[in-house]
Image (cartoon, rainbow, N blue to C red):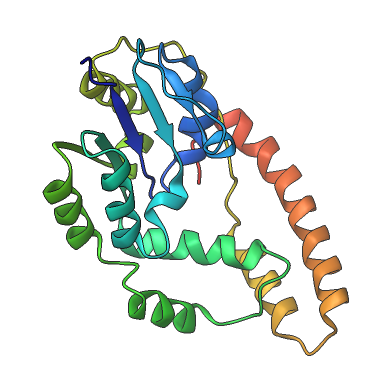
Length: 222
């Protein structure tokens, strides 16, 4: 019986996942299954199946890995890591951008993430290698330096040709000044309704300005 070929890109979040999902994976000659159609999608017996969802490596990622292995014990895994401190700051950045999250300081956020094992990258990689027959680990910093080389490494791992793709910005990060302003707003004792309105407006304004700048420089940010 022919074995269905399955590759699973598990993230991590904030490591160029949105860029890959929007600009690269859909251009590949594969059956691409993104996070929005995981429930309804069907695996192809004739093409390589590529599943991508950064939530598969967030939360209790070890338990999720076990569940993936039960469904696809033969799957090959793609995972992207990042400098831990930069990753943590990017995650905190995203946390502050959410209008429905209570304000906490970065130090408190870091404490919670460490306690939850979010920074156990090495342990997670080792666990994946124990479960699955083949695991490709990449670094987000390498994508920033050479995106074409980064994508070529993924394609080589999957045994497919490198597709043509656009290099453009997704998920723009806040600047330090913008971050401090949102921190200030969230730390004030104002009603949640007003906080949501003000932060939501600021994010809208920031993103419009940042996207204009990033579009000129063709940077990949997440």
